[in-house]
Image (tube, rainbow, N blue to C red):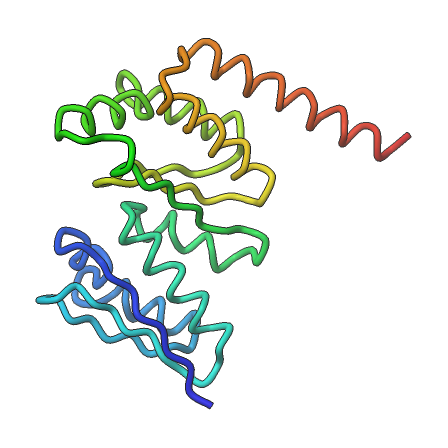
Length: 181
């Protein structure tokens, strides 16, 4: 039975999805067994194939690339079935382009350090692109990263967010140690 999914990708990400001479698209098709058709005018990507799991995986990678992840970072979704893509919509929070720039800036931080620190402390990958913040990680790590990003979006000072992450990291370590005793 044929499975089909459609994903909308912004114009500025279509080239990244296709890759140099079609290399990214071809690699994704080979890894998942799915057929990928890109309508670059409309930004509609059709993912189809016999293997439903392959189609779903390929569509998730397409979504990740569409949300600003590099193909290398997006392909990590294929290596571990416990990894997931979580997308936070920013359009509900920001009414003006200036507000959008400000909240994106809070998440990214000076020279990207804020985003990097959240990634390091949660073991996730984060992309701030357009009107979204996307997170790739395991369920618990993604939840923690999402909470940290939402705290920043709500105006919580960076120091408070990082101490929250620090506490979460210690708790996770305690939980891990607790399973051995």
